[in-house]
Image 1: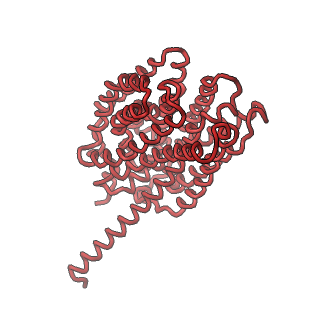
Image 2: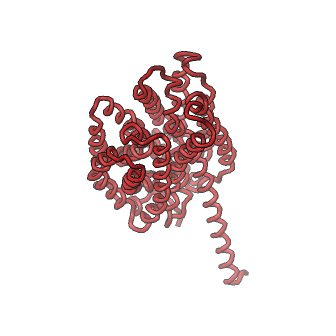
Image 3: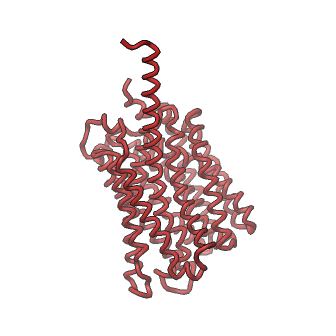
Length: 440
């Protein structure tokens, strides 16, 4: 019979082993997420350089519109990816969905890296570029729901907001990595002419190699207890029809947040160059610095949500985003100094971070385990396709039409619609279905 001290030692050892298992799973899952988002956003970071290779003409804005259109079309595969990988994640395991999604991302990056230019193969060049982006959109549609579910289920309950915030730490980290690769190639490897001629292929080749590495790492991930305890194995899409309110809530809470997120990530790089008048190097440095700032905000806001709840942060984003989007964008438009531009973009992130840090865990806490990946992925992907992926294209359309400020008001209106959802929903920290499923 074990003495009380021995029992306590064994319990402490078991708790330590469980914590180590959780942390390893979160680390590996997050690193794979970083690679996926690097692969997806390297397109946006380098589109200024490769647009002319796929879209002929002498008008840079028209070429950027074409490149942004392909970027947006990739997002319309995300609901399909969410449904496909949701079925895989909910019926066959989170780990399988995560490994297959990163493998598909690798294929998309390889296609972009190897595709000849328009001058070489004509219309086939933009067609292959579009195919690659559709494959990557399919992959990312599965990645978001799978990783959000995996991190939320693996996290310690009392610190779920903190740990799940690392989905956006690594998501933003992927974008930052893409910009750092751009900075390195701009500063140390290629001239601007060489980058436009062939250097833009290098980051896509790097992305394909990183995706293969992530695939190997993810094959050994532990499966979550929540999935292992789930008995139902019916179609997850069929199961999702039993949760219409939750699905609509995901769409509503996402639309404003995803639009704001893409304003301060993909579009801001073009905005700083085409509207604020910064040069290439200044644009890249401001974008990279503000993304680093945004990364640091995520765990801080996530930890705050573990103390005060998720809903207060969402309300703060909705209210401040509604009030300050137009003033911030107007001030950024008139900024000519890179430090002023940096401060303004960081101010935007102080607002948007209240959404990005916790949106994944909020969605995961809305659904039971049997439908969680699909419930997070599909309605989220619908909202992102409609409002996030189109953000850059809509903004450039307003600019091309001579009414650039119209986009600021459009973004404000969408954020206000999400604010109405935040005001009407309950706080998922206190009503979490993940906690309800935990054994006593």
